[in-house]
Image (cartoon, rainbow, N blue to C red; front, side):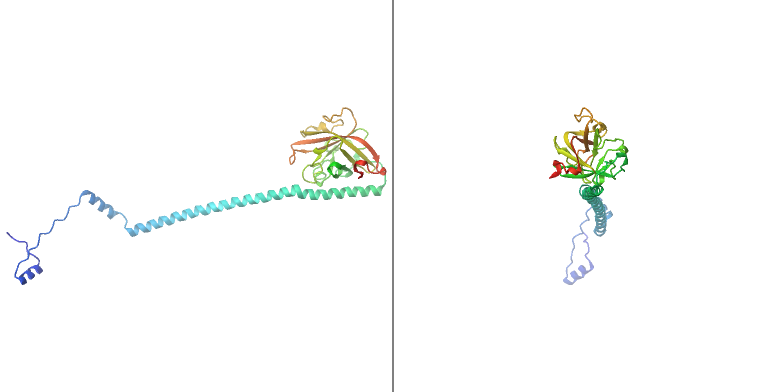
Length: 298
């Protein structure tokens, strides 16, 4: 039986010792099964740890950048929308402040100046005949109205033009230019019909809904005082109901021609959808030379 020779070094070492050295035969290499082959193939084709880490970092960085862009876009949109709402709120607040406060300040000043100017004219002009309605210019002040219960003193001007009359705090007389001509206080028969703002611009008719039967309304002209007594009011009616200012106003309770006064304004407050109506009847007339009537004497 032949022996597998050892390596040269082993043979030399054995020769030196005087003995021969036998080595065990080499063990056969294991044959990989199918699973091992597949795993090796996958391992060889997959990227190495270094390449995989770089790709993952690039993907993560791209995802973070995309999220940052979306976040920035959302933040910009949210900021713009917020600023728009704030701006709209400020503008609305300024508008409301202007309409409900500043217009009152301006109109009150204008109304007081107009009433004072009328009083000065009458004091210096002496007593004359009352002016004819046709002689009055649109927007011309010709009388002063007092509502003692409401602490209102306001000039009365010809016409119901919004800018030329009502917005400056005056009460307007329905004249021919409005298409709804009404009587004057000095007319022997008829309905003296007036319009005024309820909110803003002096709001002289703001609280006429609080007038009750028997409350006085005094109209002062160049020569005379005319005192009316409130008789009835209509809480709401369409603007198209022009019969409320006719010579014998419909729904007023009056049944025959007389000397009446009608106050008209918008309702509900802060809208112009309907009209609030207050009617009164003349109960006293006197020259200015006799002094103020009792309703405003105090």
